[in-house]
Image (cartoon, rainbow, N blue to C red):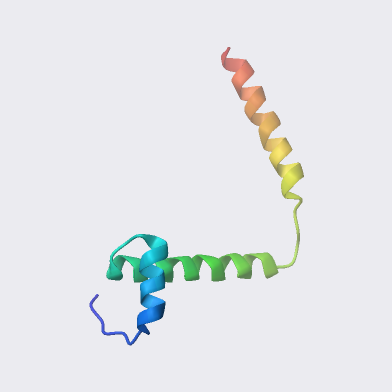
Length: 71
């Protein structure tokens, strides 16, 4: 979708520089990153917590168990 945006040159230049992309692609990537970050903040604010480290250890044990079955 084509659209006209009024983005300050300094901001656009920085996004292009950081992303290494041309203007349109840099803006698209920046918008997608903003959406991803917002979704992550929303998920983290939900009630209920899990211990990522414990889950990671459990997943690692499951993977190791699967690997030994195929050996």
